[in-house]
Image: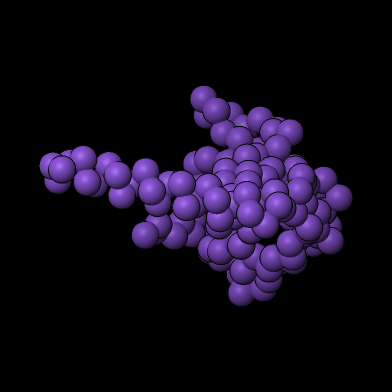
Length: 151
Ligand code: CU
C-alpha cells in the first residue's frame, strides 16, 4: 500500500467515524453561539452603531434576526453596500463559523436614541436568533473612531 493510499484510507475511516458520531445520538445538531468583541463607538448624533462577532461552534447554522435595546425603539441590522447602508432581514451565522459585524461592513443600527451613551458606559442589547435563544450582550462605549485590530 502506498503512503498516499494509506492516508486516503485513514481519512475515509475518520470521516465515517465522524458521521456515525453525529447520527448515533439521534438529535439534530444545533448552533452553539458565543459573542465576543462587542462595542459601540460613542454616537455623535441621535444614531449609533454596534459591532460584535457571533461565533458558532455548533454543527448547524443560525440567523441573527433582530436586536433590541432600551436605548432605542428603532434598532435594525444593516449591511453596507456601495457606500450606503441597507436594512437586512437577517444575517447568517454559519455552522462552525462566525458572523462579523465590523466597521465598514454589517452593523447594528440604533436610531432615535433616547439617551446618548458616553465613552466608558455600557449599552445592553439583546440579540435574537432564528433557532437559538436570545443572547444578552453589553456593548462598551468607545471613542467615536475606535476600530479594533482583528487577530
Ligand atoms: Cu446603518
